Image (cartoon, rainbow, N blue to C red; front, side, top):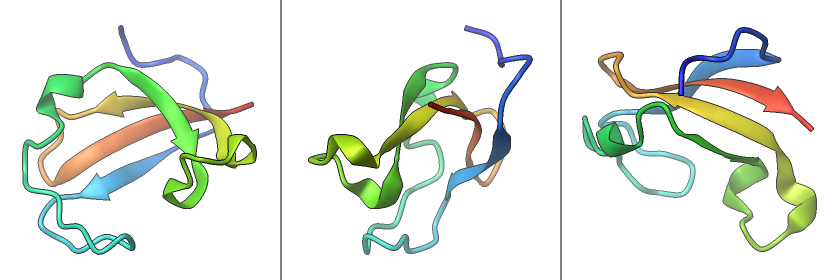
Length: 74
């Protein structure tokens, strides 16, 4: 899938080698296999709450330093 032409915002989904709010540190290249996929955009890692699903995020894993995303809201 190619990057969406229209999106609500773009930015880093996660940065490599920096501790995240959930206490995990993501290594460089950890999500390379998901480059170009679309995943649910979820508030604060709350996967058990349907109200936490805000929209969708297109993952761009080609930039050094982490995973960049182009996201749309529901």
